[in-house]
Image 1: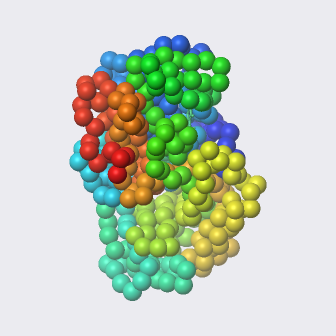
Image 2: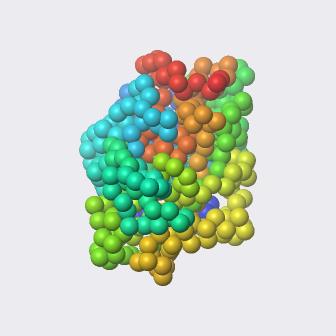
Length: 373
Ligand SMILES: Cc1cc2nc3c(=O)[nH]c(=O)nc-3n(C[C@H](O)[C@H](O)[C@H](O)COP(=O)(O)OP(=O)(O)OC[C@H]3O[C@@H](n4cnc5c(N)ncnc54)[C@H](O)[C@@H]3O)c2cc1C
């Protein structure tokens, strides 16, 4: 797919992803069996799996599909969760690969694994970098790989549309009333529904009371196109993505046109204020400046490069980094998923499937996802 569409209206800079086409619905229905709030990987996967199970959900996205973390992520595909593999979330990568294959989604999914790297004195192989004054070693090679994340998200959204889902963009949910019936409220309309799935990730707290999640922006940059010799000099010619298992945190990967993406940094704020922090704020500029300086200092071949993209995206955490996948307090028919702690590309697609199975087949949600901890 060669076309691009602007991925949302938020002032967080542009990621180097290509977007894609989506035919969203023109009007919002007044009734639904299931309303899904959020058009990222979790919500689109839930819509897709529900539709395949014979239920026609209505997905509401405040901005456009893939305008949150899912269209701004680094697209490193990892198994399990930020705390490791979990019951029923231990084969997320093969599940994602099957979905991509089944729906013929062109999203450049490659699964050569991922390096765990560490600052310090030793490991199987040294990378030719000095990061924050320290050498860097590859200390592990875990299952996973890379994907073009906005093409993946839009690909799943389009598959959901084909299977019968209704997707409405520019449809911000302002409140979910759970007193007598489930009513999902928007600025000038409302939907009465049997079930609600809140897949709003960094914005969950604004919609569901009692959530103990923290939201932050995290940062990334993409280099100019580097020639093969430079990519080789950096030790990245195999196209294997990487992330540090110690601090200071750094992740990265090569993307198809020969740019290298690096990411690091967190800027915490309340989920309600995330959208006010943008390119023009000092803290945003400082975070990007810190990251690009760090990248230029990694290797002499990077010392004078320019950056084609610098951007941020929202992530959500729980205190113990365990993802949330559960019912809202005292509301069995309102399900919530998110807070993957920056480890959510494959996990969110699996979470969407588990949510769909809970609604359509009454399957229990896994115990680890409860948020009463
Ligand atoms: C810069 C960055 C790099 C990352 N890198 C990686 C990585 O390499 N590997 C990895 O595994 N994970 C990574 N992650 C994390 C991963 O991208 C996320 O865990 C995943 O995309 C979460 O998907 P989601 O659908 O739950 O959330 P999102 O994609 O954020 O979707 C939530 C959606 O809800 C919408 N919404 C919010 N409030 C409302 C409302 N009131 N009404 C309607 N819609 C609403 C938002 O607009 C948004 O589109 C990264 C994240 C970021 C930001």
